[in-house]
Amino acid sequence: MPILRSLLLLLIALPVCRSAAGQDQRPAGHGTLTGIVRDSASGAPAPGLLISVGLRTKWTDSSGRYVHSLSPGLHRLRISCDNWPMTIHEPEEPVRIVLDSTFVLDLLVHPRVCTEPDSVDAEFVGYYHSAFELSAFVPCPGTIERVWRPLLDTRDVWVDISNRAWRAGRRLWPTTKLTTDARYFVRWKGRLTGPGRYGHLGGARYLLRVDRILEVRTPGPGDCG
Image (tube, rainbow, N blue to C red):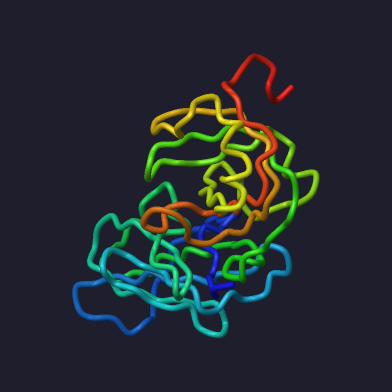
């Protein structure tokens, strides 16, 4: 399995903000943004996260602390893992930096924010939407939670149907050809992996490798009931 750090893995990010007079070393005409990122479960520091403001990026140190020297004004903060360039969290409200003062923004993150992805082998029931880079599997509510509790919701699942499964299950498709921009109700057996970067341009957070196609049909009322 490729080594992937989960992003797409921040369940909790609760800012605790306060303004204070700053004693940090900073360039003239700037203010300071600082804070400590902690594990939401244990309260332990969360080192090695990227805290970005525009093109400026700082890592949290061993104590979970980060420091940015910024020009006065409103700034948006982004958080990502070391080897995950996409944003995993962005606070809704921008940070206001004041000249020669310090703004403290403490954050809580999920305890497994940058861990390896998990996998589960199971039967998956839901809807498959085929549309090139927008292709995705959407599970029926509660079906995955019975066998696995992933870090994020699983509405963004890229599908990889094995050649063996496709050959054996092709006859089950409602049409003789898998059309684009089509939606099907499906029952599949396979392996769900994530969070990570999968699919077109790495835009999906989960990967479903289908080993066996059990059912594929046109959606109807009560499919997930």
